[in-house]
Image (cartoon, rainbow, N blue to C red; front, top):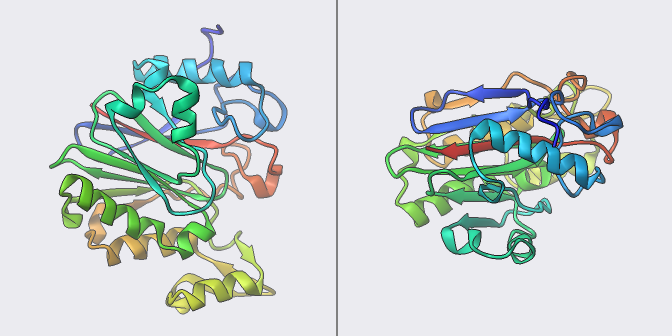
Length: 262
């Protein structure tokens, strides 16, 4: 194990009782388009490098590897609750139980849940009153399907969350200037009922503002506007420091945006 690895994290202040962050590209052991901090097992990186990077992150967070939980995302809207029963499963069964989910929620202390992105939008939600949190992967398909609103509803059902008590962090992702889309993507948002004048712009092609679209969903779900923070980082523009699939290709690393209840 390489004890010199030191993950570079952007931390978010979401209130006492939660450690929230997104990883940068540096501080890991992966190479080439995965350089250097990547813990996603579904993008083609070396298992040995992933294991070293995970160990380094767990050291930093002071948790065991079995308390670092991430799903295999599929651009849908299913959410899974991370409880002790799921964590007690053997590793193979646990991976099967995390297959096909794009959002996680938990109320367990000492468990880090998170999602992987490389232009898509990661979102963290924190309910300090009920000691619960969620991590959400919102690509354009998930955004169209209102995964952020659904996550708030599922936290409400699971933990008794009051949306107006939630804090939200929208993490690094592709921003309006860089997210050029075809007419079919624009039409998907329009057909889903979004106010297009607020989330799109037309230059030579349509551009969609994914962070703003998700911010508006959180407002619609009942969050206070002053409780929602948006990262200024555009992954496409800052691909030297953050993974961007549009810049680096699909066979590249992923940002990990996670939260750990204390």
